[in-house]
Image (cartoon, helix red, strand yellow):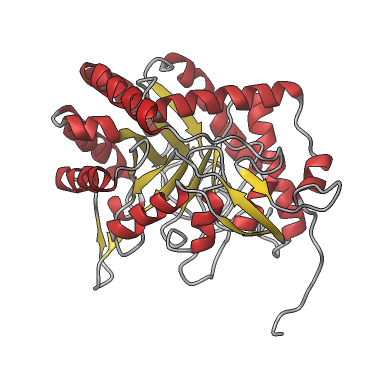
Length: 389
């Protein structure tokens, strides 16, 4: 083979023994998970805000950023449910450049994945312990989900991964909401097929085991813009794009139809300062269309302490080393604006509540965990005394 096996890494069960959750941490995570699910099911009428750096490149500055969200969450808790982004994997179109904390805990040093899996778990644990937030991460590598499955309350599948069968199958065994982004081509059918696949149960191979998943009824759409045949970035957050997604949901009759709008990436042409305008336009569309109001669950915003981006090793504390982000002052203002706008969406709350309750009663599918190591999976023919790895 054309690969050199450099070292064997810890399996998820071993890493969890090294970095175990306390009872208090587990209680916090379960409470946050339950509230997030209640929003996706329409039992609570808050907007979800998945917000934070493009990449979690530095533990101290990421924790500084998340700590700043704590008092704001308390102020807007009746209108907004904040899920900080701690994205420890960075997908790269050409596989060049900084690939995230998992690969390089120190962006200025060589890759070290052994330290990387420790650093990612430690950072997510610090967030829970020190701020009371349980966070979101992107599932770039399906086999790595087990390292964080007891910590995360939200998982994103990126535009380059959404067509991959293993990502779809693994998502079907995850018991927290999973967002499927539209692919880089912008094809809605790819995204909707991924949602459909993940909402159903499957038997497949996962980390050397034959497993069976029961389906994830909270898998949903993320619109992030796309790239056309000429390589130009195009948005898909406008009114007609949202109506098209409503039509797709109506046609496929999926469970808990929901939308998160990614306000950066191709939607903003990677200009983070456009995110405020995009949020306002989407909320305006929701105020004028009941179907959009029903499926709109929130936004994904790239935000950090400082505006913009820099090269790795640039030396500016709290400034992104990947995609440009909105700085803290502008981000704080945007959060308050979203909370104010959500008051105007209250008129739709009864409609959304009735719609969701009716759907759950008529089409509810159980999603009981089959293992403490992999919620949603049932293992077939396990070895005596096995534990999921």
